[in-house]
Length: 321
Image (cartoon, rainbow, N blue to C red):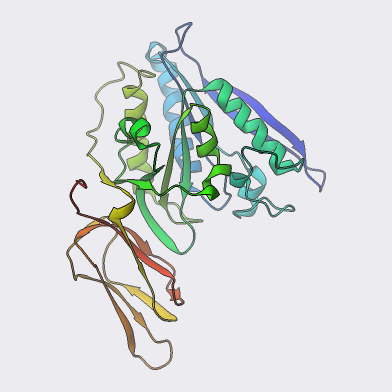
C-alpha cells in the first residue's frame, strides 16, 4: 500500500492538515479497472470511515498473501474532510461550508473550495469507478442504499446491483446536486455510486459488514480483484424509481414512536408508528403505510414538527421488484 497526501493546507489556527489517499497498485502494467472509495465529505457521517478501515485492513492482508490478486488498482480516500471529522460536524469548521456543495463551477478561493477542486482533479485523473460513502443525519435511520440521479440509472445500475445494498433509489434530478462530488464525477465519465446508510454520528456494524461484502463483490465484478476465494451471496436489491417512493410526514408537533423495524416489507395500512402529544397523552397521528412496500427509512429522533419526515417506503408497484 502506498500513502500519499493529495491535499495539504494550513488552517486559520495554524494547524497543518493533510488529505491522504491509500493506493493498492495492480500487478499489471495496464490495470483492468481503477476503483476509488471516498469517505468523510461530511464529518458527522462515520459509516464510510469505518468501512474504509475494513477495506484497507482486508486489502493490506490480501496484498501480503495474494499479491497477484490485484489485477486493477484500488484507491481509498478514507477521510477527505479531516477538520469536519475532528469536530463531528457536517460543515467545514471556521468556514461553515458544505464541501459536498463545492464541486464544479467557480466556488472562490476558500480552503473548502480549493480542497474540493484538488480532490476532484485527483479522482478524475486516477479512477474509472468511484463509490462515495455517506450516512444519514441524526433524525433518520437509512437502510443501506444507493441513490442514483434520474437519467444516470441506465449507466450505473449494472454496477449498483453488485454492491449488496437493500435498495437502489433512482432519485429525481435537481439543480442542488450539480455541485456534489458524485454528480461532477459522473459528468466527467467516472462512474460514481453514492451510498447512504445508518444514522449520523453513529456506527451500525451490521450495515458496514453488509456493504463491505458488497464492495468486495464490486471489486471482483470489475476485475480489480481475482482468485481470492469464494464470494458472499449478493441478494438483488429493491429498485425504486421516483414515482415509487412514498414519504410519510408528521402532521403535528410531538413525539414519534416507531412500531416497525427498518428493512421490512410492510403491508398497506400497517402501522409504522404514532405521533404522541407531549402534554396530555393523546395519540395525535397514527402513521400507516399508504401501500405495500419496503420500509427503508425510519425516524430515529423522536421529536417531530409538522412536515417532519417519519419514514420512506419503496412501493411495490409494477416494475419495482
